[in-house]
Amino acid sequence: MPQFFINSKDVIDEKVVISDKENYNHIAKSLRTKIGENLLLIDEKQIQYETVIEQISNKEITVSIKKSYKSSRKLDFKLYLAQVPLRSDAQNIVIEKATELGAEGIFPVISDNCAINKSIVEKKISKWQRIMHEAFKQCERAYEPKCYGATSLEKIINLKNEYKIVAFCERRANLTLHNYISENPIQKDDKLIVIIGPEGGFSDKEFKMFEENSIPMLTLGNLILKAETAVIIALGNIIYEYENYRKN
Image 1: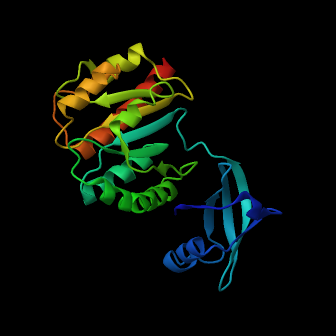
Image 2: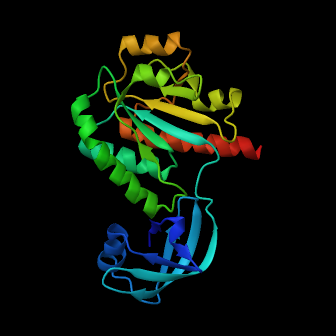
């Protein structure tokens, strides 16, 4: 069963009353949960609650708390995806999988070879946020990530003094992800932005922008991957390299 987000102010005397319409409809009507069944909740302080349903009325669900604890379902560093949006279904997969892989936020980037107009991207932000919300619930994330408004590659690169930034560019890459992290290990609480381009790749002007701003251009190997696959492999490998470095 997915977890449901509540506000800590709703926790009173080891009980929680769930009255907001979205949660109520999902729990009582869509999932058809019954009295005596378990329910997993989480609040804005990242406190997880293991509960059991005591009462279901026409508008509210009352649960009693069996156990509460700080959620550990998060990365030790802040991972962001700056990605050029793909056409509908592929982009929905990117949004969902990036959320599952612990992304703190997603920046839709309008690049020279972006297949979607900025105005259309802006209209899709709320839909992508809903996809992130559902993935957050299903994967028991400690906090809900954010889908930001459409931005430019230049604005992402201008964040280089606040964030570590890497770009995956197979045709111009000069360093493997493993070698980069070996030389520049990710530390706890670091903020890392991962840039991934469109199916058509970055333009010469954008490659020059990376070079002029000393943005590392990394490779995922000899294979040419579809953009949505590259997102999953890149984020997954970054997490692996971080965990592997920390253990050693």
